[in-house]
Image 1 (cartoon, helix red, strand yellow):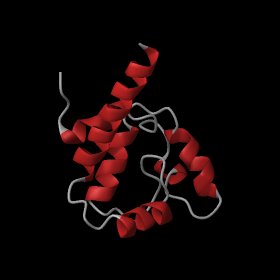
Image 2: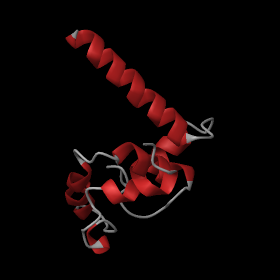
Image 3: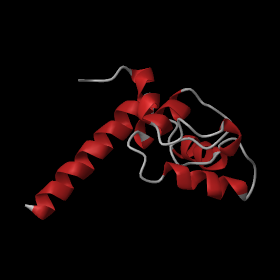
Length: 100
């Protein structure tokens, strides 16, 4: 079953966390990012933040500064969700090829 674009949140590793843990400044962002590692919807989360130009908080394991830098490096990208999902699929296929 395919989830609708907004439904990814129900599987997020942070769904039961206090939002104040994810919308922090400075060195606290490194701690907040650890919640994202291993999250099953990290790609969807990051894509939403990039596509909607969300300025604050840690999304998909990236800080606001990291997302701004990525947006500056890739101004040509119109749909981050498509790009990131395609990259994830390519990575999965390459990984499966190496194991097979």
